[in-house]
Image (cartoon, rainbow, N blue to C red; front, side):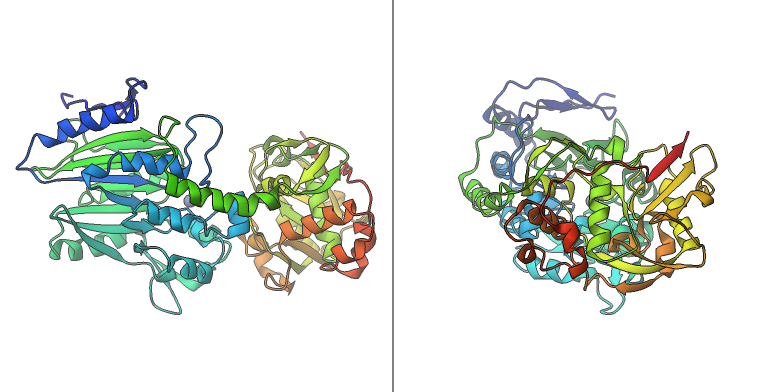
Length: 547
Ligand SMILES: [Zn+2]
């Protein structure tokens, strides 16, 4: 337990032996830290050393109001304060989405930011695929660094998905470093724009074991894995592949780390927080065995805004903020988007959104997984702005219409309520449909069959109904695997996106002059539904629970 505790005033944290981060003090300036850390490193001249700056999961380039404020421009200043170390900058994925800005820019604002931060190597995260592979390929042409994806291949091209690199070998401070980029199967399954049938996935441990000998044969002295997976899988990799000295993870947003051993400290797993609020400085000395020092940095207002990046932030903010501040309608009652409500019962927000889906696609019924509705807020009555809509529906979700038989619908509903009372995203919000479920019954046998009514009539198990849902769960995601067996009659390329549909509805209700133009993207038979009037959705007994 005798390892030295190196104080970083910059972060206010000290990494102690035993794997805990202990706050030390938060009053010193960044400059103090710079001098202090310089002194620590500068003493051992004969031993080669390498510093790495690592971050992951960044969504909003704008800073937030409360500390740590983060934001790309203060983050850049924090990075700049460590430039004298000539750091290798590594990023573990998720930059292009989701954020309100990304809905408008499709993630383009991140490209100049990542370039300005002088990222050397990055790994794709799941949200980098939110706008599809073609878009990803298109905009990453402008990044000045390679993107990794070691263990996922595209079946058609026989190359790594989105042209990711299998590995990168980079020489930094005369140290040859081999870098892998590994992801887990679980998030591949949830990608809205890629089918798991279009890719070949190799287990991350198998893949690491395949590439490490290649890296070693190429003379790599240090093996790093960038990862985008949940922590238990990172720890599995950490324990089963000891040749990897550093696992730099993403996907989880909480700062977390673990050394292999309190005394030797020659292997480290770390996740570096999220959203430009935290990052890691990792100082490595190439002793035998190597030694690793970790410093957590937190981006607070004590860092000035970097001017170049602030210009970029402002340029993109202006571009989207004008649009987001636009009042698109008025609501007459509170809209309940709280997770505790929408993931456990019928809510008026769920009714509003699914009614729009059903009417505007001329379907018999609509079903949406509550995880789609993201605001976690009780929206007050009054002005409704585009940014309110974006907080509810930040993702670009395409709708599909399918033919479903009554017995298949039962399976879908069973899945939807199967996790209750856990607040799961699969819990359904529905339109054109009412049902009762017994929460004390075992999952998959909770729906009271005789209670299922479709537009007021008893559901028939062999009858075909037209169901509108979003393409994500139509593809079987979130446990709705039964939808994969249904015949699609309006596919996602043809269907409008949900956010746009809801926007059109709210605007048409608000505009008293003439609803026809603003609903031109909707079918004729829903124009009555879209006609001007107050938005005042109510709860009407669509989902009934026996507790
Ligand atoms: Zn992720």
